[in-house]
Structures are given as C-alpha cells and as structure tokens.
Image 1: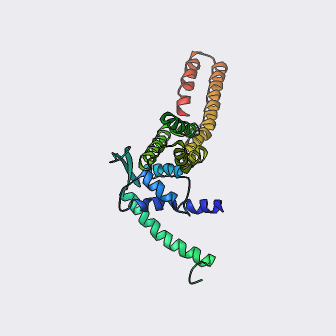
Image 2: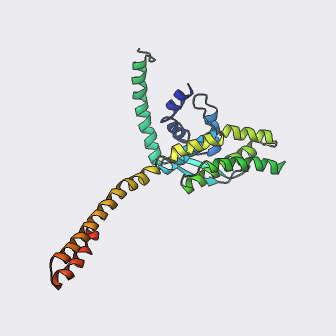
Image 3: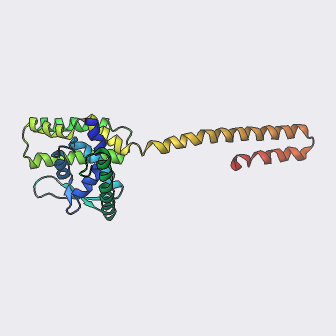
Length: 111
Length: 135
C-alpha cells in the first residue's frame, strides 16, 4: 500500500508544490510542514528539499533568502513563468488523465 | 543542554552528508543548507527547548537514509549517463585508433624494408605521422 502511494505521488507531488506557491511566495519549512499534514502526500519532510532543488534547477521555481522577523533567515520559493506554464499544462493533462482512469477503473460517476 | 542539542543536529547532518557521497558538491551543500535552515526555523518557530522535541523535528524530517535516498533519486540519474556514454564510446574508439596506428607503422616498416633507396625511407615517417590525427 505504501508502494502504491509512492507511485501515485511520483509525478504529481511536484505540481502540488508549484500550486502551493502559485499566489504567494513561501519558505521551505512552510511548504514542507504543509505537506507533512496531508495524509495522502505525507512523506518524510526532508525528502521535499531535494524535490524543491530540482524544481529550482529546472527553472520552475525561483528562490531567495530573506530575513525573518523572528528567527533565522528563510529561503523563499516563487513560481517562475516557466513554472506557471508547467502547472497550467499539468492541470489540463490531469483532468483528462483522471477522467480516463475513472472510466477504466470504474471510480467515475458515469461508470 | 544547548551543546547537546547542537550535537544531535550536527550528528544528523553528518549522517545525511555521508550518504550523499557521489552527488555533485553544490547539490550536497544546498541540501545540507536547506536542512540546517529547516531545523533552525522549527527550533525558533516552535520554541523548542528540549532534546526530545528536537529529535521529533529530526524524525519528521526522516531518517538520514530516507532523505539521502530522495536526493539520489532527484539528482542521481542525471549524473551517471554522461560518464557511461563517455566510457562506452571512448574505449572502442581508442582501440580502433590503436589498430590504425599499428597498421600504419607496419605499412611504414614494410615499405621501408621492401623498397630500396633513400626516397621511400623518407616517405615512410611522413605517412605514419599524420595518421593518428586523421583517425
């Protein structure tokens, strides 16, 4: 069951991350903590940092360090225009993908 | 108490770092900086005092094995293919170049021996020299 969750997460989690910084820049700990609270996405928090790093290197996220009002400096993540188009593309793909799976597996309403 | 807390964190980061061997140095450094910043944020924002609470923060991050495995998964696959490709074409190419060179030397020696006179003898080294460049 854990393997199934891992497979489903792979390929979708990064878009959940992109969506999280779509309207507002967020810092690492904030993003990571948020995912830790999601039962279906719950992975060890530390595993999200390599993912964030990859998204930054592929040009979908931008980062900058900023002072925090209370505590150590924070690394803020923001969505680049490439990241924005990747997210838009995913949304289109996902909707048709989901309906195909629903139809074939029998989880859709029309099934 | 404070030094003890630092020890737990330092030990954790060291255990992660050890398992990042083989990854590009910048990505190793970036991940360690991210983890360090995460732990510092958690400490400050959750007002963590005890070692027990700090260990909880580390447990939520995941074991060094799990975190390092994720890093290898994200950064790893990109690194090996170029190395493999270099090796896979380099060795046959080197072997062919070697064979060609040996053939040229043999031909050179053959011509120098079979034909008499100073003219081919001076020609022979001239043909062997540019051969490796052409191959």
